[in-house]
Image: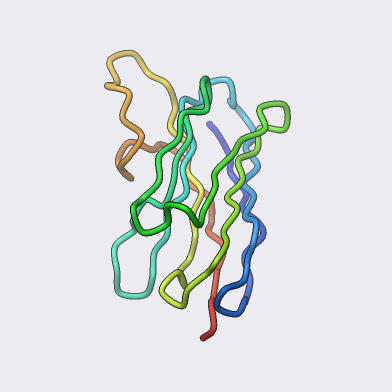
Length: 128
């Protein structure tokens, strides 16, 4: 099992910045990738960004490219999401997720169903 704890959400004005953190514990040696998803009220949970643990290869949703940056600190088992130039439409609960490596997995880390462990979420609210 892998446990995930997010932090860093809050209320910010449009154009502002935040840094979200997600600390992993437990069987962290099994982690293949970690991702950030977000879910606004009445909407589906969508991927924002993800990073492969071994080579730090990254993925960004088109809506956040150029504004969000994902990074990881292997020594601390922590993934970060630096979010800048925030817009009201970025308002959502942001979830951290971890995908465990497993024989036979195709290596995808783009979809919610790729992930095995989830944090409790942290609220990000952007006021206009």
